[in-house]
Length: 284
Image (cartoon, rainbow, N blue to C red; front, side, top):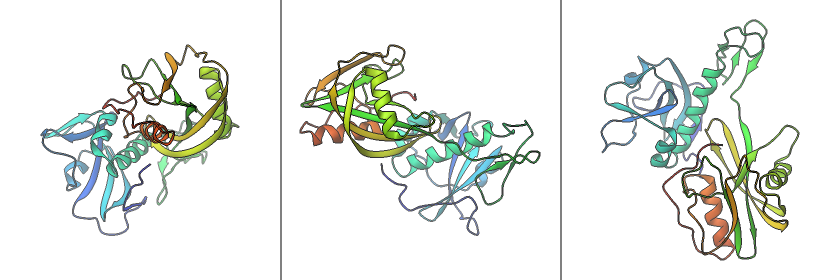
């Protein structure tokens, strides 16, 4: 996926604060967005949010400007709350990736205010993205949950499925979280077999994307069908079927790695570019 162009990650500001900065401010998991419909997110003077911030974290610099993640108790005048998925679709890279990073750092900070071992309030470590328990020494770093995504194909067709939580009419590639002790490739074989009952081979790595719902790392593959008929895992899959390359249903937009994977794989197999929709599948 697209990298954070000109972004230099850091935990501590490198020197004097820049006059304006990218401030990714959140209220209860939603990104603050200008109330004026004609305005977009842009750099501002950090002091406008700093006085209200319950927590703030330096993320680095984007194009030479400081970047901050801030947790606010409520939206100040002139700002409204926007669901993160909707905001990311409007931001585009590199701000989409920056918002993803900010959301995950703030959620990690919120959920690790107390030690998971002994319950003591934790303390932020200087110069490191970590919280340490002063009583037992347990240290917590931001958590990532790796998940695989697999677009299964055979001659002239791709296998797409939908979860009950997806937007109406939208189908996507298969996906699932990696279990302890598994490699990513093991996870692909297991999840494909569990969710639709088929066998695959010739796994090809496509790319990865940070996905902040809540803290996933999506790792995408294409895989060739080698046998088996579709048998849905009813608790997870509402529908799954083979679609001809020139007759695909609605699929996720290119804002997500699922949209990239489907569009690029279908074209590589000789099909047309699929129709991308402006709706987003729900986080799994």
